[in-house]
Image (tube, rainbow, N blue to C red):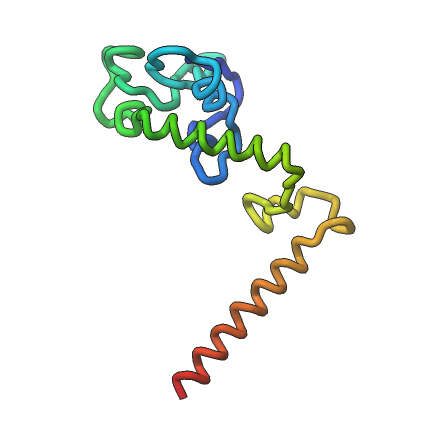
Length: 146
């Protein structure tokens, strides 16, 4: 399965447990019947083209002259990864249907810097509470040591 892109995309966006982009894993898990050789982005830019993704056997199905050092050769698509993606996407769907929508920024505080909804957000309160719990645990451990 090939998704043609002109922008900067990376298969690391599919990494669990917090994928940024589930489009191709979604297609792989729910729209493809039969064997799937791989999932790749075809990065197409003026004067430059490359593949990036996960392929079972990249030399046999994508490019015969790939070097062993290529990421396409090193990080392969496996049946286990496909199952993990499918399970994760199904859990996301169940959470959505159940009305669960936790505010849990993937890259705190970087995400929050660009948000603009700070007056509605309770992330800083949760972070402060987590830090307070950590400090109390550390103080308790020190008291136990004495």
